[in-house]
Length: 71
Length: 427
Picture 1 (spheres, chains in turn green, brown):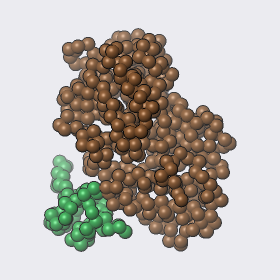
Picture 2 (cartoon, helix red, strand yellow):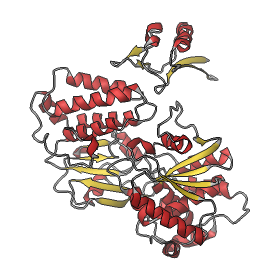
Picture 3 (cartoon, chains in turn cyan, brown):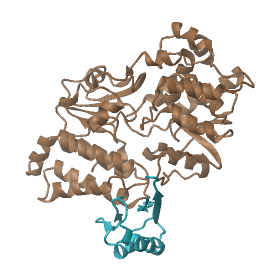
């Protein structure tokens, strides 16, 4: 089974906040504008939007990690 | 392992402290470093197994099995570097300074053994810029070792900047490689570290001293101390409200309060700060907890880098925590937003609370900030800070409710009982 997760590189991130606009279901911002994700698998219907958020991040701080488990 | 190790096990008591400082005295006391004969095959694998049998866990904070790290470096192939991490960024820690000043050859022997076992071509000793007495002791030892033929791979000293975060292993490796003392973002913390394309095996100075002793006495002598799951002895720096601060060698698994008592506290302690400034407060209810990674984790604490600080009855734990948090905030590498903005905000909340200047939303806001900052840095610096503050809110809960109702701490304007570098003291 393949799952997708959002990974944020905190060093690269500069709090542009586009990710929270593009993917409000999975990304919230803290009081300083930095994204918070819970690390759980993305619902299938959000994978495309997450990949778009990763592409559109001006700092390239988002990775959508694909993991296939053999279960 | 070589039979000489077993023979020596009868004659050398297992201890790190108290061995002679000079090379001749060192060799007379503990024997020559049991390095492999030239051209020995399979020695490295044997050494990994021997280290695994000892059960040695790293003494630099993370408590990672030393044999696993070595096996990874061994598998990466020859040509790497063994880094001796003597950065000791925790202001309340002295054990690594003491080891390098008193028993430098023990630490360097450990590094040579790991270099032989992993095929490394260099030993690099990292001593912070400014700690001249430590660097001088190491240089003196290195000169003796060259003439004594004890350094089959070259040993050098390098001087990274003297700050809290500089000893974080990814920051240390990066500094050696590029001169930038900054932690790297590693989603999988177990990822092996590299300098160029060669492996970098980073070990705390105390861990290496244990390696040198285990190679001589065999794993069983090490295991004759401490616990099955957390064997051996450990160096602990004691300070705070005590008559005799200093470094002691203890067995893993002894009760926390017995360790604190070695420094003769000024009266019954109010609490113990265990593990350092990125560690946790422990209240009297847990004073008899065993000093082991597992037992400490079960109460939300950590052995950290081997620090026990006694908080006296007349001090305010919340105010001391505010001092520490302010210091930790000042030591952020400045790379990750949640650490850069979150730690000062948490320190402000804690300071207001201790001064009896809490607004009605303070406690809820502080709890939210702690939850949001945790786990969101490239390194674990923010996590250590969050853990310290959480433990303070729990252990000093009675003070928290008094101060939250506007009653300032009676001791808030007193100077800290802790060792905190001046730059970070509260105004």
